[in-house]
Length: 432
Image 1 (cartoon, rainbow, N blue to C red):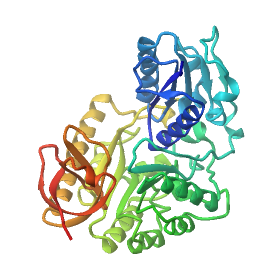
Image 2: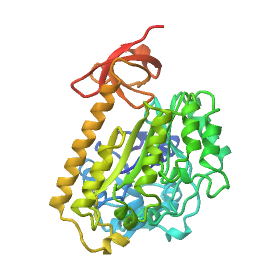
Image 3: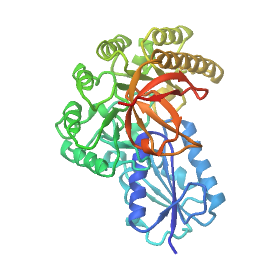
Image 4: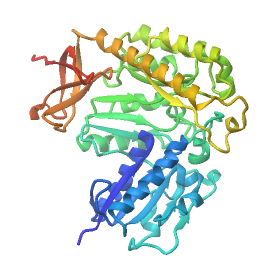
């Protein structure tokens, strides 16, 4: 009888690309992949540890897996597994914990996937994590998340990622391009470049992110590339201009700000100030007026006064951005921020978060409204969702139309005509 396996991923798109690669290993060995929560023989949970909620979600996922599959072999990997392997091993039902170096080596440690009397831990010190493991997602038949970089050399005071993933590293451009060609051969039309600190690409190979995107731009079969989160100090004018001139790299940027207060940016040990950040936004909009710009921001960092928050709010309100990813600060043991004074109360953090979410909704709506009556290229997705299908414009506007099998995984010029109840845009395919 064919063994069944399910996967559950917590956290970032980088984790999703890695889970997909782990899943491919199972499928190549004859396993049947099923939805998480269904009865299976093996469960693999890929964890995050950016917030305390992510840790909690790991424990909840284990309980859910046990409920549907009491006898399933449960493997835990990811950032939480690297940081606190013993803590995970003590969760009832866990059979094996795989640290960063062991993430893709499950089959080297286990043969029959029978429940173990005692959980096994395979981990190492983070300083010994130096290998780059390539990965890309293949669940969505339209777009793929391609891992181009891992680890981080930054020492932001709130972040545990360097302790969970190690120092910045990457494959050579030649090997990364090979992965892009593999993705193209599988029929994907769009690639999202992902990693921990992708602008730092090339540190371990003597290359650069600009060199990489120039090479990827030449890969046949891929119509679109999106640059995922990139640090403002690493987003050079050359990268911005290349994106503007390219037919494949899209006018879509995701840039972490974290705070609009220079005082807090210094406390966070970020490598820029708000003035530099403003210059980057202005340069993007000068060259690509219709570009979508998503921003990360943290509320409630220790020492964030009412004035600091007001500075952040005003800075964001006056910035030509499209969307905010708002994160409430959570204490991560072992980070410098955890030892800082002037902690902010949960009530104030919640109030500030709500204000920024409202600002984000306003900015997002304004961006959509600005494009009503315009025509943009849309790559439609393959799935049929209750008689509808969805897609994204080049500048990341989500559209919806009645399902049409002839548009699956196809790029079409699309006229944006109205905002739907779902807050997506409706419109019509422009017939040439």
